[in-house]
Amino acid sequence: MSAGLGRPLPGPAIARVALLLACAAAASCAHAPAAPGGAERAPRRTGSRVAAVEPDSVTSGLWRMDEAVGTAVGDAGPFRLDGTAGVDTRSGYGRIGRAREFTSSINSFVLVPYSPVLEAGGAFTVEAWIYLTAFGLYEDTPIAARWTPETLQQSWMLSVVGRNVGNPAQPGPGDHVSLTEGGDTGRLMFAFQPEEAGDARSFFSTRPIDLEHWTHVAASYDGEVVRLYLNGRLDAQYASPGRVRSSTAPLLIGNYLDPRWLTTFSGDLRAGPNADTVPYYALVGRIDDLRISSVARSEFPYARR
Image: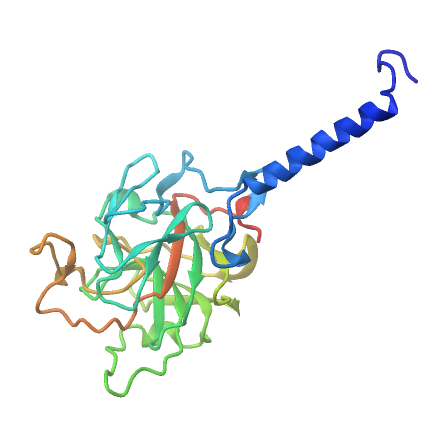
């Protein structure tokens, strides 16, 4: 034996140490958090720690969706751009901690008021963990967007292409028909309105999002190339030089509607009496750790599934 390593343990001592280590490992497993509702909901771990998105110097906003009660949705980023959830969302199990659960309702959304910090500028990234339970009946279901029906209030949108079969009893407004052309059901879509005059541009992932599985999605734009990522891996990229148009649109999460419909008259933020209350574009599922950044990120080490 090499000097300094001490004497070997006698046989009975080795047995006792092995037993203690086995008991400690079992206790650790027994106290690990369970995965409610199935393995697909268990948070991803790196070593013994949950891998989470963290704010940094280029984070514009980070909404963890960890609130267990109420409609306040806090921003963990440096600018504290807190949002308000609609009355038909609720807290659910997240990829990491809690998540915001969205339903098929016009009052299922999170609204973050406009701030100049949200402008795409010369480069930006939007990313989130999503868990979809269904694809929409209409053109798409937005994950996050600064895009409203009001004139000149379209900047960008991260969405999932829907089934586009509609409902004969409730014809949709068709607001996103031109955006989703060329995109198959379940594909991740990133669209933006260029600063210069011209039509909106849409870009799609090559693979569909899996239903009932947590998926990390991201879109980045550096003024030259749009890149789409699924679970931290580059899925598609498109040359598209230009800048994203600025607007005063709020950030709307989990739905698409006209924010001018919304009112707090009853105490909660909800669609007012004159609103079209059919949830054409409502996302059905959960969103966790939504982050917007002021750079075009290319690495998402916490996103590998």
